[in-house]
Image (tube, rainbow, N blue to C red):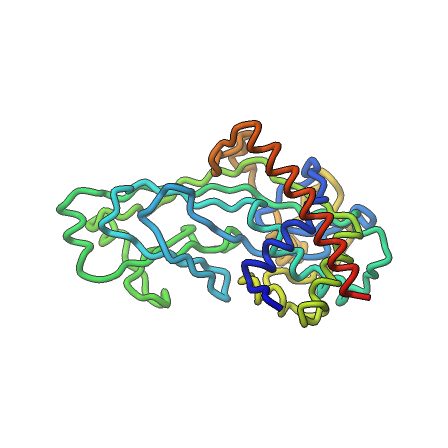
Length: 306
C-alpha cells in the first residue's frame, strides 16, 4: 500500500476526530489513562516535549529510551529565548497508537464501552534564555552543545542539563554554563490538564487499520512505526483506587505516587497559542473537508477489512 508514516499519522488523526474534550479530574505530571468505571489509573506514559513554534535556537529533538529528551543548540540562531511544551496536542496519538496493546494486557475487550477510559494529559511549559552576545557565541562555537530535558517525575535536583556529549553521559557544570551563557534553571509553568475520551468505534477502526496495514494490534509496533516510543505502561495498584480529590500517602507505592504532583504547582487556566490563527472561512472549510475525509476513510476501512 502507498501509505508511509505521514500517511498513517494523517489517517489516525482523522479516525480519532470523534474524541470528546472533558474536564480533567486529576493533575498528573505525566500522561495517564484513567478508568471512570473503577476510578483508577490503568496506564501511565511519559512526557513528549516539543519546542514552541518560531523558536529556532534548539533543533533535532530526540526522545531517548530512558525518558530524557535531547535538543541540539543552534549557536548562530537569532532567537535566544526558548520554550518547551508538553501538551495533549501531541500526546493523544501516542496513546491511540498503542492503546490496543494495553487493553490486551488488561483483558479489556473491544466490545466494552471504551469511552470510560480517559486520557489525562499535563500541559507544561519550560522556558529559558541563552546569552546571545557575539562573545558568548564565540565561546560556545568550540563544540556542539546538547540540552537534555529530564522526565517531570525525575528525582534529580534540576529538570535539565547541558552536555558536550550527544549521549548525555557527562554534564556541563553550572559554573561553566554561566561562563557560556547557558541557563542553569528553566522556568516551569503547569497549566490546567487536558482530558479526552474516545468512543469504542474509534478503537475498533484503529484496530482494523493496523491489521490492514500489516501490524499486530496487541504489540506496540504500530506506535514505533509512527515514531512514538512504547511509552505507556500498565499500572498495577497495590492499594485502594484513587478517588477524585484524594492524595496518596507517603507509604503508597512509589511508582504510583510519582504520577501526581507532590506539591501544588503553579497552575494557570491559560492556553499558549502554538498554531497560527485561521480566518473563520478557512476553519469552516477545513472542518468540512475533515468530516468528508473521516467518512471516506471509515468506508474504505470497512470495505477492505471484510
